[in-house]
Image (cartoon, rainbow, N blue to C red; front, side, top):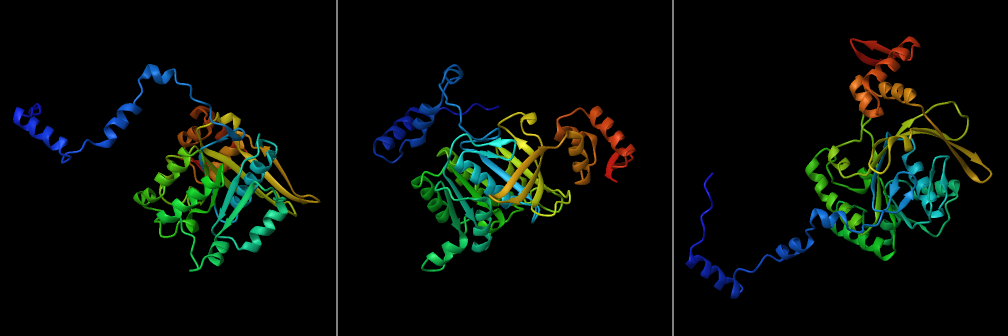
Length: 339
């Protein structure tokens, strides 16, 4: 390797003269980066406060979380239920709970205003901590009939400033495909129009929940790059136990940085009409049942299932053999298939 050539005395003098004359200004970030660098020992002893838990056990202040599901499964329902729990500081189902009331801004970019209002009525959402920003109201309130589009940097800045002014703790964006018009979901580079804004919201302590559609393969539709910076990702799946009234679905985490997997088991959700609106209950789904659901969703190998469920391949193999004997799945050439 050739060593870099040292500048001559004349070159050093010329550089100094240019600097003094303002022709070669010092990079303003140099001193900033120097002052921001912390040694390992100093970093170890820094007093860094724990991030506040917003919804126990998985959702913390400043998080970026994703909720995804196919159309009609219940992702908007769940998003509204999370908003209600956060604003009222209460339980959500039998397994999640918000310890303190927080200010939530629910941005809806798809539903008809009347439908959104009906859902809020059914869920009993009336807390002053809950705020709605609807694409329909934005359109009617603007002089030039503005279309809500968070792919526009000026709208991103405006929404950030609005959240800071209103002291919003949690921003729910429902949903990706309609709130970010012109964004190519399949191109990773296009996500660069959004990720810096999300990071800026995080630095201001604003947590974000992004609601997304699932593709035909059951995964989040579009580029996986938007998943990289997520603290947690929650998948909704259909459930059909034959209830006559209400709605039901299943949830499971496909990513979670904030707690252990056994703290957030897969859940079966049931929403039933009652005198007080909606009665919401949750029950845990055992891992063997989760394995069968994953196989029915297209996961075929023991290694994939082991990684998803946090179990050894030998355990998955034993469960699969039992499930095949019970007629719940098929095993063909080492691959697990729906029955």
